[in-house]
Image (cartoon, rainbow, N blue to C red; front, side, top):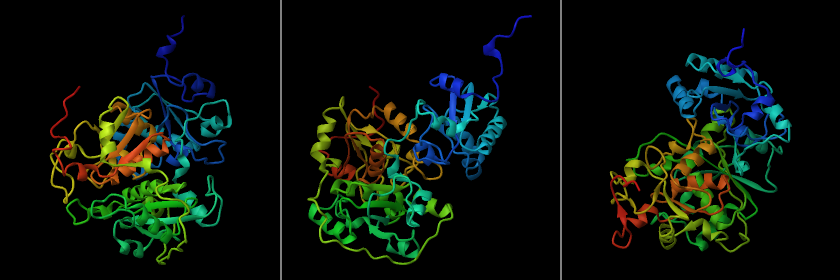
Length: 443
């Protein structure tokens, strides 16, 4: 009696470290990391020797099984290739998490599921095994990290010196007054950009603002926003886009010269959902006499129209990326109640964003945290947006572009910027600034 063909056998329910290591890169094997996203990105958790994830693994935090409705869970599992794969390996740092996802996959008809029992703890402990992580993961902080810091602790990648926390939005101090993260100061984006054209303020004005807030180049600045419900026809709908506002502030502070800027992933909402405290005390900044350097320290981070045209003239080595909705891109809508013309900058590359000018679903998870960075990078790569190019993002006035710039910054892309004037500036002179409408012609 001969044995059956090995390729036809149902695999063991578990997979060993040796086999998993040998099969890295196998196109027929999907690997899913069920831990929380900060651990996947690079933060150490559960006493592991290293942070990050197994190369090629997709992120599917097991917590989503409880927090996300069933149709969305199925869509996510499909979009990450987990349902379509011949074989799936699950790993994490708690058995109950991998077992919960295996059970859900079985309900959806995926039977080729195996569990790496050694989990992340075993993998991370072996220094010879490869690990992937978000290069600047420490700039994307999580609620547990911030809570420990505010309680006087020294979490991983703690600030080297003085730090400040800012609740950021556009002209809504009453939101801050209602409640905010303990110790946070209020930062109105109007202090950093001119409401006449929404570009960053002059170096002199930025110097005044940063000194008022007590910020110097070596201050660690931790930013967050609060995303509340709203609609695009409000007078100032941007006030509802707190996390985008925080990213816009991060961009301008980086341009000015602040070295260590952190963003709280998921913002105010994640802080509250994790059961952390809030306060109503109106904290006042402690101004400083001097910023300490001549602003801007990093002028290359924000470009203007002439540099945008330089990028358009070199599409082999550069990309001007439109972070706008498809309807904005094809000219069906302008996207803003204060911008009349509709269309796109001729020669740009569409980078998508979300449902409207104030949402970024294409770049975020269902819980409003940053989407797994390999997925963002893959989408960009498919569009011809790669780290070897000079890449500048633009949107209407620099807010959504600021969020994508921050994500590229987390990935440590070397030459990234935001075209500050964006569609608002470009569309005002269609004679000098070529415009396209309609669906792009495939080349």
